Amino acid sequence: MRVNMRIKNLLDRFAFPVYLAPMEGVTDHSFRMVCKEKGADILISEFISSDALSREVDKSIRKMGFEERERPFGIQIFGHNEASLIAAAQMAEEAGPDFIDINWGCPVRKVVTKGAGAGILQDIPKMVALTSAVVQAVKLPVTVKTRLGWEQSNKPIVEVAERLQDVGIEGITIHGRTRAQMYGGEADWTLIGQVKENPRMNIPVIGNGDIDSADKAIAYQKRYGVDGIMIGRAAIGNPWIFQDIKDRLSGLPIKAPTYEERVRTALGHLQVAIEEKGERRAVLEMRAMYAGYFKGLYNFKSIRMQLMKADTMEECQRIMALYSPDKPSDFNA
Ligand SMILES: Cc1cc2nc3c(=O)[nH]c(=O)nc-3n(C[C@H](O)[C@H](O)[C@H](O)COP(=O)(O)O)c2cc1C
Image (cartoon, rainbow, N blue to C red):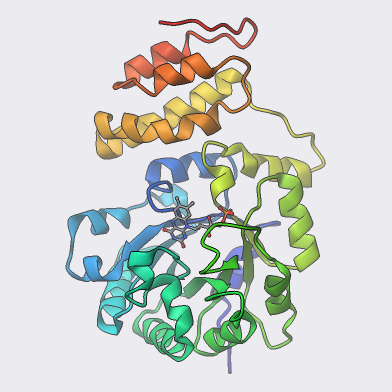
């Protein structure tokens, strides 16, 4: 069968394609922009419920929004019902992304019990049929993000990847864990490597799971031969990881961001988030990012405690200005 190469062509634009992983509640427009600026090549929306999208729920429609600067950009949908998956994929197509990604990897109970996300790994024929229906319903390339399998004794990813390729997906991202592992233990990349080694596989294979440094990204890409790397949790509050990879590949030393750069990045992120969802919510949600943005700073704890209580951007700015990296203090405002 003829394999479409649109995702492959898209990846060929990058010497070492690095994706920012889709993360519900994290990778909204504001955070994606920060990561893009720091060198993430390919971005994907948070996962969007196909049921909600097909019912035209406002919040889900808004989640499809992106800026031109975010390209190449994928919209990720999840679901279990063929009609809603098709309707959602067609709505996503109209939003004009570069590709549509189907989430067959989410391990959360309320998703899997319906047979969506990683729940589908218990019914591979249905996974193949639903994926095929989505591929047939849109003109855009369709990719899949999934896990190794349902549990330790059931890791059919090598066969699954091939079957999904045969129904027309153009790329696959594999998180090296089973559903049963949730986010525990260590990601196992050996099966990801085996998918890539399968001589029948032609589509790009993206490796995902536990990449937390530039050195690890480069080592794993080499060791397992994947066509790209996807980084999730390690980018939360540390978008510099993308720049680190680029610096390493160019033979440049990795520089830790200065305090000024951390403040500029955090406030830039906050500013875009405020424009998107209002000051109150944006400031509240930023609290989850401070541990990352200001990681490793000597004696920063009291400043962080104050940031956790701030309600406005102005307050955040004022509190951040209290810290001096040269003269760290336990200043209490
Ligand atoms: C808070 C959070 C939200 C996530 N939301 C999604 C999601 O919406 N869609 C998805 O495919 N994966 C989601 N994931 C999984 C990540 O994309 C990624 O596969 C996983 O975190 C493993 O990669 P990492 O070790 O680099 O974090 C989420 C993970 C986290 C921690």
